[in-house]
Length: 333
Image 1 (cartoon, one colour):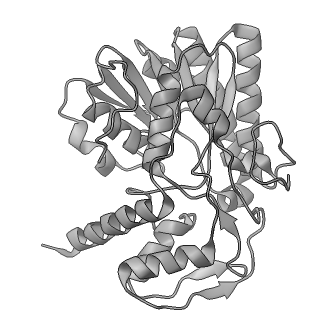
Image 2 (cartoon, one colour; image 1 turned 135 degrees about the horizontal axis):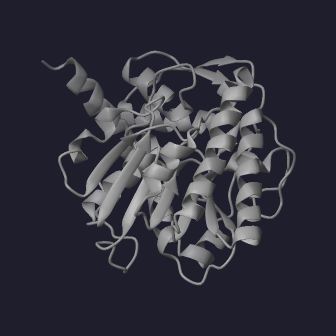
């Protein structure tokens, strides 16, 4: 899947820990690292949302190791960071609705678990921790496109947890000289994103609906817009953030494409790729949802050399094909 090397530096002598490495974004990062000769790749995952299927191809490789553990357990975090140069922290409980239904668990995983990883990485002398931040941090700030230093009030418990991550990371930089980079993801999508369950993201839900010839539900009037970002762009950002030089304090950057797409446009793209003209069903907007989201990615370009190479339509085409093949393989004897 990943043919492009995102940095000129050799990673064959470097060791990486990917927390949440059996999940959607994490397993795509693992694939890149394993395919491009990383010296050692560890995964820490409790499989609450991740899947062994996402990483089982790497299990026989000597440079790969799996630690089944929970970031809420400090000892598991300490064990995972032993001998590691870089931590790519993807483990979290996503979903705004999930956090509204169960704010306590979201806080335990996303805040307490994050703090555990910061402490473990700091104490182990990790060179850098790159972590999954979120565009939800922008909250109710109306400005578009979103720029890193202008945020509003959070609109959900999930958004609170991701903002607290940034605050903790900033404090660790100032107090302990442990400098991290937060990647504010904007609606990442692509292969391995789970279309099932009560908190599935919109693109896998739409694709699965279209493949089954079932009309999807759209929350609101369909004119809500997002900066949908193909997962390979997010992988690129993680690798470049690890290896970026001359960063001597905590930084946060937007990871997106810089292009807004409405839910109505998104459904039309998917219908065109699959060859259907189903009409969606509309229902009430969800609590905690932001109406429009669009990123300015210039800081990421300048700071880590990030260049979003895959547009939403190219990414969607690849994603639709992956789900089509995945669905076929599950019904083929």
